[in-house]
Image (cartoon, rainbow, N blue to C red; front, top):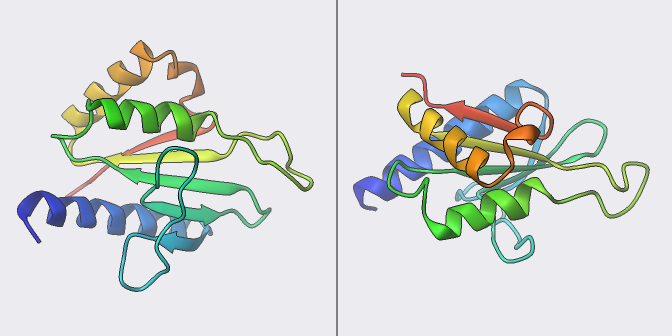
Length: 133
């Protein structure tokens, strides 16, 4: 595993720990301890979890090098605009959690989300994290 892959895995592990602390159940994750995540539309997220009410939660880790890539921008749009397809929560937006390495990356991410018109979703169904070391 190269340094960027190691950093990416560290971000995934940190986000999954934070989600578990909040009572979310990890269903699939980029890790040897879980089944690999299934594709959601055009992309495969790093983490798929659910809340105690059954709401799907998508987690995505972004390294500094990958925050602004076209693929990442597609993921931000695709994952943050997904809705529950069935059940009592049908039509409700899924939660989308994004983790980045540093606070400065968080500011870059906020600007990208703003440019994509997704800033209105921050705090509603988009939640931003950075690695606190």
